[in-house]
Length: 105
Image 1 (spheres, rainbow, N blue to C red):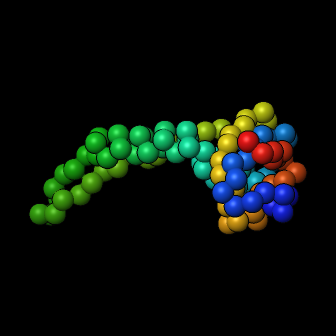
Image 2 (cartoon, rainbow, N blue to C red; image 1 turned 180 degrees about the horizontal axis):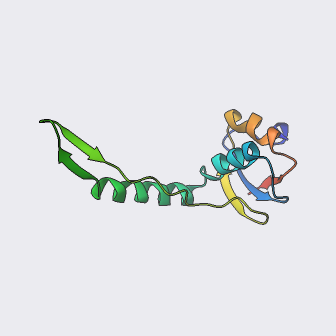
C-alpha cells in the first residue's frame, strides 16, 4: 500500500470496516488527527482550555487545575479524512489496511 504513494502526496482514507480491537481504533484515530480540519479544531480546543485553566496557590506555590482534553473525533464505518502521505505513517497504514481504503486525493 505504501509503495503506491509518494511522500508529500495528498491521500484520502475511508473506514470500510469497524475495528474491534482497541489498538486498531487508536491507530486509526491517530491517523485521523493528521487531517488539517481536525488539527485546527484540536488547536482551538487547546487554546480554550488554556484560557479556562484554574490557578490557585497552595503552600506558597502556584498550582494549575487543567481540563481533560476532548477527543473530538469518532472512529466508525464510513468516516473519511484527507492527509498528506509521509513515510513515517506507512507502518500505521499497513497495520490497519484491513479496515481502511486509501486513495489519492
